Image (cartoon, rainbow, N blue to C red):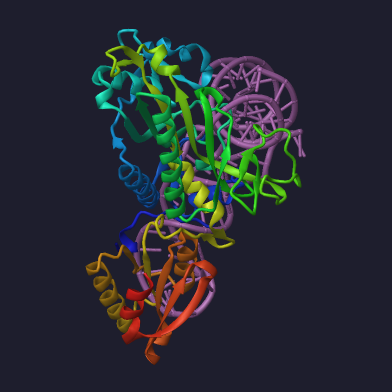
Length: 417
RNA sequence: CGGAGUGUAGCGCAGUCUGGUAGCGCACCUGGUUUGGGACCAGGGGGUCGAAGGUUCGAGUCCUUUCACUCCGACCA
């Protein structure tokens, strides 16, 4: 992609209400755009690319673990939520409305009811179990106070998965599989995270774990052990304090986390409420044992930046970056620079590298600032040292610069990307 | 829902006290010069001043009502 054709409205100024690095840099970098405030955002081309890349990682790992992707209807009949009782208890966070025939509908903030409805219509036998269905699409929660950009929006992209089992043990087996799958996802995305014991909240059910991205800006207080992988949300571990001794013998530490994933052992709460049953091997009707598993995909973008940024801008991780490589032409009027840049650009594209060529007429400084703000992992700068046969290879982490003879640059790129 | 603020160009703001031609910075357009750290000069475009009503010869400014947004708190994946 040529930068000159890209819609990336970068800015020197941040919105006045932005305090988090992720909010500031995603806005300044032209990744997202606020829509009339109040927790609604447009994703501009680069934001959409990052979102899709993160989504792809989530999808690949879930598919690998045997899950199947579906897409539930966006608008949900309120009657389903009346069956489960949540139409009453969920309160004002639920956005409700009527259609032209005065029927009641809502925008789902989560989809236990809708998914149970799908399964109860299609699964009749224990032979069809277990089953793990998921979707990755927009959710809406009419938050009392949306804030922090993508961290707590009202509309957000969430992966929600639901598993159905013939017995409790099998549900626990799948719960463990999902925990491992989530660890793979968070690891691939380059995140420093902890799995912690959690409170089940409004979803209900027993036994739940949260996946916390460790960051000072996190809204959750957690206790972690640095010697082993123990961790807990302080809401759950109220009696545990900093300095207390972990079961492994090391002291516990109090820290902050961003909740980006949550897995629950649901049991039969929703299957019973919605009368969703299958015939077991005795020929008796039985409610499904269920698990439910969420990942805040759009929140992950914020989390990645909270954990990976400096005072110049974003630093995307390898699997989340909007481009793999940024080629910066220092002076667009220098024919030798342009020729070499075009050559590298075409060669990289031919190798399947997702590359952006900064071919703008602007001066070196302006283009460099944009590179730093956008936070693409690597750059090649073709500038004034080309007359000596040198170009620069830059790694965004630490802005490490390395001079490379221009005739070797393709080889170096092949090794480093 | 309690407390505190703010609504003026795409973004960030001044002007409101003390009524009298709608301003500044960034961004944008045209021409020229410039090209290793967010260039410079000259010219230019863009506004129902959140909305409604009122006072007045005259309202961004004063009065009334209303809506939205932000921050702190409570709440929350």
